[in-house]
Image 1 (cartoon, rainbow, N blue to C red):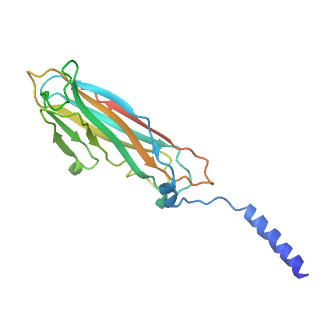
Image 2 (spheres, rainbow, N blue to C red; image 1 turned 180 degrees about the horizontal axis):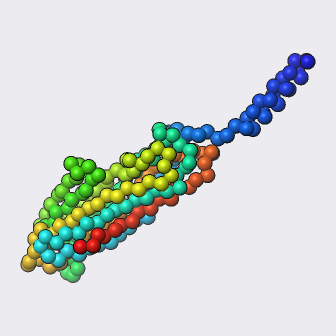
Length: 202
């Protein structure tokens, strides 16, 4: 067999072997950091606290689904975070939240998966226009290879002062962000990402 013929045989054999090659079964962690940042739509709402010691719990639940099937332990979701703004206002004038109008104090507890990591802050009697910002991480416990992940971050609001203050609204704006491994060009998955707010019954 001539050298040229041998080279041709080897080239054909290599091509046939590669045709049987499947896509990579892992996603490098760099795929996540290099992927575009996914962001949910913003959710807004409010809950009314009328009496002293009245309490309301809000569950901010982020869901991530249709993740790439092929990813390694090093290719987990990255930089998942909740972005939450909380504010206070009255239903009628004066609206408050201007740093000059007196309002009832609230105890806001940000509940973490580990109780020791939870924290509580007390709002001022003269809250200003800048909302309280809270941004905990999300999907820290998303298992390797999972195609669906969910994280819930509860916030509990308790009114500390009663009369003579009128009912007060606790308002919120919430969204979430995350990066996931794209695994391109081996994966055609397009992750679905959303956030919902559940107001617990009192």
